[in-house]
Image 1 (tube, rainbow, N blue to C red):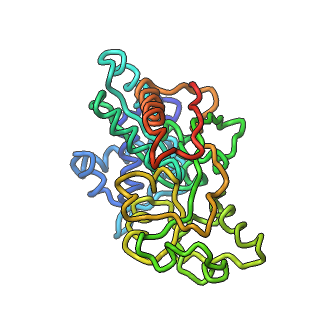
Image 2: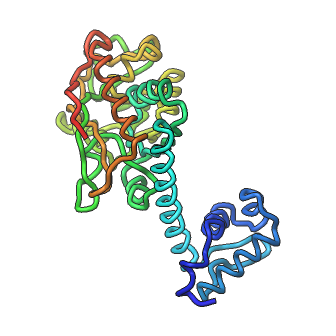
Image 3: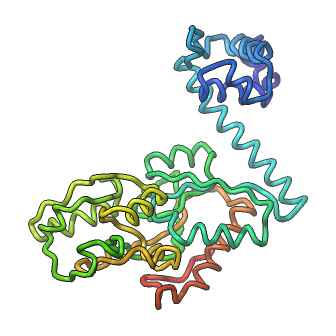
Length: 324
């Protein structure tokens, strides 16, 4: 079977199998995940390698390992399936109006109170919309945006560089604040010196993020070495749990701390002013348009912003949302 016939011959099962083999490293487990028999999966892989004219996976006692060509094939298989999924979404949305799938990448601040609140609002009116949230730093998420796996990224625009490939759209602005659990020994002390804070245990975003650089600059301006991070993470689940349950100090968007679900447990440290106002927005591929479901999620974000103008007495740093 020649390579020039691959586009006429290959099916979705072949692409899904290539990806499953990469993820599971085993024909048995890959076949099981796709509801195939092991002989069928082995035959599909054999046909695929014959069509390509090269080995995609090396078989060994422990399973299968992708070759360099195999890794490239998996990457492009994901792109093919993502595009097919987008086609299916468009057809489904035309037929049902409220169906579809949205996959977003959340760059730290983007997964604060506003995103889950917007999802909850969207779910009430469009329960058939499926939403996937992937958290991480921009360096991890941009390749997944370019491959088509993610519809858009949401977070601080300064963390995602605009380029000929990625365009940006500001939605709103928000400050970040230094916080601790309400009963932390330093929580109610407005005159603690930076040197003392530098000796505390901190939970911080990675050093490559804009927020971390802004935090470090607070100490550098006073000729104090910034604290080392005891824990580095962008996971809000981990951040919230650890800040509430330990004496770690950390940074959170104001909207998170003002959320009633967290305001009883977390407080802003009065010794620190809010960090520089940040624009939060959408980053997406140049020349692309959002699906109806993704547009509905953005509109839900706007609705949440309009209804939370008085969170915590006021929603500091809020600006009007732009239009798509």
